[in-house]
Length: 233
Length: 242
Picture: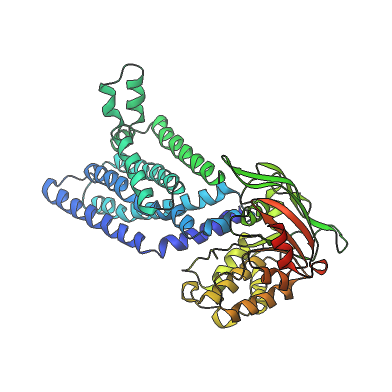
């Protein structure tokens, strides 16, 4: 665990001293702030459902940019060799990169909680969908970060890593669309693979363990694959 | 800091390579290499580019796994007891992998902690290695701003900061100017005795000036392993073997 703490500190430093983090944060808050203001102004309804769906899309688009440098940069600069010849298990290197990127995503979500505070001050929102929405976004963020860390472990090219992560995120988003063309039981598999299907239940205020399990299982799978890639050198 | 080694006499083997091979698909990078490295000696791996030197060093450091055979470092198997083995090794790769955005002291502190030094022990170890490798002038400078010679010193310092028993150097004078080469050789010779040093080079003079023994590799095979004292003309020997 000491090694994990040392690695996490280094990764957090690298994440939060990078211009990428601030560019991503600027875009995230600009877009969500703009939409929140407009929605509130026009509808005068105290809920964040629309914003949550917009954040869902923004995370799919922006998380690959946060994670693209995770391993690709280390491979490009050969610094991965330094880490992998140290007495540190590969899984800690992967977990440190995952946690550092997830911290940034959590920071974005924490910042956006200002919208919920505003609703709470000036209206009477239903808090269950708001809590559920933030939990869903955090779980979604964890899955997208894990996918991004995995694709970054495959290449030394950051653009390739980001593009592959974006592609995987989009494919998971639209996975349920293929269900209309698939025979049973594959249609059910396609529906259950879909990101959005497991997201909307949270945002509606219903929380199911199966939905949380979906995000956690896929996140662990992506982290496992990333660890295997790093080990198979 | 690496765990204390069991008492060994000078001259006992601290590194053992037993019938090690490494293949990439059909390509054999290293074939059936066996050798031992004695405690406190400087072993030079000599061979042309592509002779398997770097692959052998990478297997020794645990970065690569052998396809066949066994390597031990300080008595620890590099595959089955990788973590223990790595604690005894400091490694300076040829490409000088450094985090350019970090300052020299910050980077060495990170490496010291990563290699197992406690929060309390790390600062003293960093100060010691900065003085040893003469990095005091640039300790607060970002690594990306340093010259090639200073970057080489930082790379050597990161290999030494956790006070390993064995220092592995891959082509340590590559890309340096003549003065920096002389300084690096002097540094390596200065470390000899207190540490076991394994260095690779494709330059005859490099090995002649720094090594106690030389292992000549060609096409991934070990052609000869002998003491420099018994090798009055390394150039003639190299030509006769290759």
